[in-house]
Image: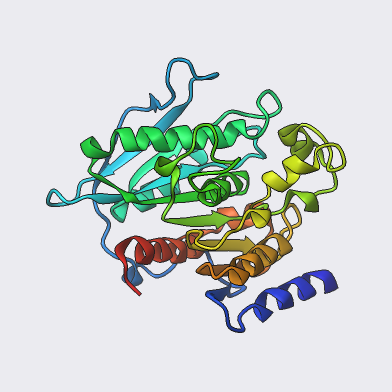
Length: 303
């Protein structure tokens, strides 16, 4: 309990100065905000699930697409959505509710599959996200997407992947060979983010994802750790994290936020009091509402 209190105190201490804001959800927070505070929901239609990968991709991967039925012919923001599952399992259905929330707020949503470890090791999963972004750009005209207003949304390992995508830029080792300008994100909403893979004691999931232990492949751990890839000019981040998270401890969020602060990257941290890793996702309502509001401010250019 002392460790949890210390970690929470560290998170609150980050409130002093910098480019970010920390929110603390109350212990009795049910995970949703009052209906009177929510904007009216927009209707949307869901396209049949379809492959976003080309025929020569190592594995056929599919995406679920939602198109909001907004008035007029203007361009719309979009969201690339990535599920969690330790890089080894689960699927887009886990993020279906979040995709629908975003679509009802005017975002074209792309909720994707990706390849799994250990059959496919990093950076294969990042390449999948880069390919999904290329597919979204290919369909931008038909779906009326503003390609300068695409955001990334993920939880747990999905948050890890969208964060790396956001930080990879259009050049460098992480961007090659499937990255480029098409892979740029305007902002990120990341929950339960494993931000520094060196923090894990050579557990099976990380070892199978990266192909070795920290001592065996340290360059892979550094390259795959968002906290070690932060650069000036990175897109804004909204983070939410349970203060009692034992699977991905709170310092992953607070230390990552410190890196963002040090490089002048706009950010917000939403702390979910008394919640572990899975409960922070199951009771994510108010955190997601705050996160979507953050994304809307970024893509709409409002304060």
